[in-house]
Image 1 (cartoon, rainbow, N blue to C red):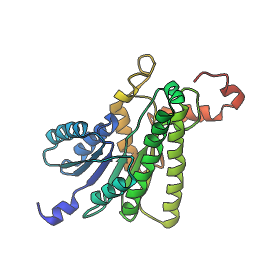
Image 2: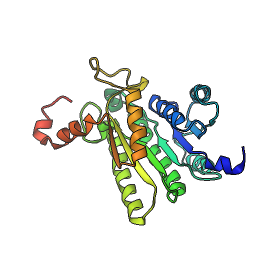
Image 3: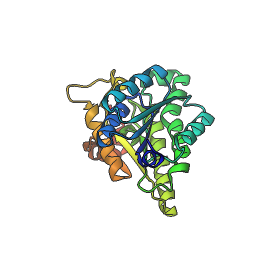
Length: 258
């Protein structure tokens, strides 16, 4: 492949690429751009290689590479973002890693609480900052961070996890403000999935239909990124549900076991 042809390939970076949501998004992007350049970042080599192998079978024309790194190491994050931006910055970056603990365990285990806050809040912010520094001048570029409806209001059922996701909302809001004032073409998208049927939520309680199919959520992520919307609820019903929950008076909220 010539240099010009390689430079014209769509370059997509997925952080936390072995997550179920991220893997489904990768499949959709490969359907859109079968010859794209896909760079998968993860913490676990075996899982990452499994995902990469499946994607290579689905799209033999694509260029698919993997990088394993420590998501808690700021220097490793900065180095990975720099490498993924050579010889040019990505067109799309999806930051998708996360950890959903049992709330009661996180209350009793401060190490788990700290890990939950870091993996779901601080680490995604560091990745975003590292990539934004390289993508902000790229026309049509999109950077998406997977947050959660849990970040919309503190609730007794998941407030440690929700606190980290709330951090992402304030971060994304501020970053969007900064880029708008600077007139940068990069669009930052905060994705807020509701409860989704993935391995991470396998222990959640709920009847049939309580968890959204991961394929549906992935379609919403890919569509929302393409549109460049600041905040994307998936499925869309969660925008109304969380608007109601946010508006509940504290006295009413404290009588609800949600």
